[in-house]
Amino acid sequence: MTQAATNPALTPDDVLFPGEKPFPMLPAVDHYCGSEKLMKKAMAIQAEIAAEYGPLAMDITCDCEDGAAAGNEKAHAELCVAMINSSDNQFGRVGARIHDVTHDHWKDDLEILVGGAGNRLPFITLPKPRGIEDVRLFLKELRAVEQRHGIARAIPAHVLIETHGALNEVWDIAALDGIESLDFGLMDFVSGHFGAIPGSAMKSPGQFDHPLVRRAKLEISSAALGHGKVPSHNVTTELSDLEYIRRDADRARQEFGYLRMWSIHPVQIRPILDAMSPDFSEVQDAAEIVSAAADADWGPIRHNGKLQDRAAYRYYWTLLKRARSTGVPLPAGIAERFFTA
Picture 1 (spheres, rainbow, N blue to C red):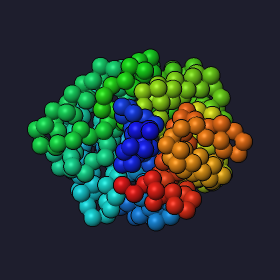
Picture 2 (picture 1 turned 180 degrees about the vertical axis):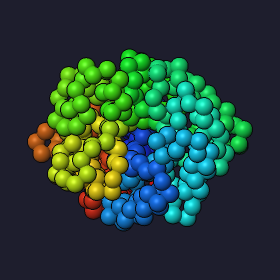
Picture 3 (picture 1 turned 120 degrees about the horizontal axis):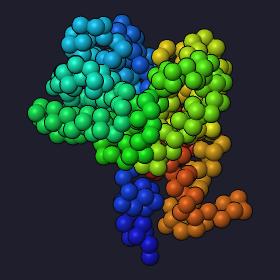
């Protein structure tokens, strides 16, 4: 008799990923905003998206880096705290990006954000690390600030890879504890090449086809996935052509393995979500295979004339979790059977 049969309380994660840290299931969209007006608007849109796709479909990042005017860093960080703590934040999925570690205010950003909203922060994003030592410094300070303010949990860190040094050490950065996502910063990455990469690589098709940018994107997604972290794709600059936006997101997902993408305008959110979501026909197959596998105590099964075993079960179970987080309807009975917790 299998372990699953003797202990029906075991979840598919317990059976298929024993002893492994669960892969983070983050919303497929990370929407950036820098002003009070746009933060409030983003939270209203988040509620609309939750009603349409589910409560796990969209994150918001309050931007202390580009959102704060020079000299106004303290007031802007305090504004972010107020927004995170507000009743408009219905789902607890409003994070923040701080300044980079070379900026005079980065530690104050952490102090204000964690001290004022540490129990509600789903993540904090670090921009422009020059390499792994900047990331280690950030994580050390974050843990110290949490301890000072009595925050019992470790707030997940998201790290922007946008410099030569960070890209060179991306596998080591991805291996650090406390990191949940690696994000690609396209604009700063291209700008850091002193004109060797043309400006056309900041938009499609160049951002996917230029060899140096393509290499960076693949290295980041490979490192993230190799260490159980979520790769998050850069923004698209297109603000009106919905098919263009969807195509960018689709290429990021299908060709480069990114599971999440930034948004900088409300019109971008739904095309990104649609492109990042699993195809319903594959979700149907996944539901049938995972259900049959559970019925067989996770032993090998035959499905549509093909052998399926635990390697396939891991893939299809992860796909079901992604479908749930992106609002793809699950076949009848699947949510009740596997997602009751």
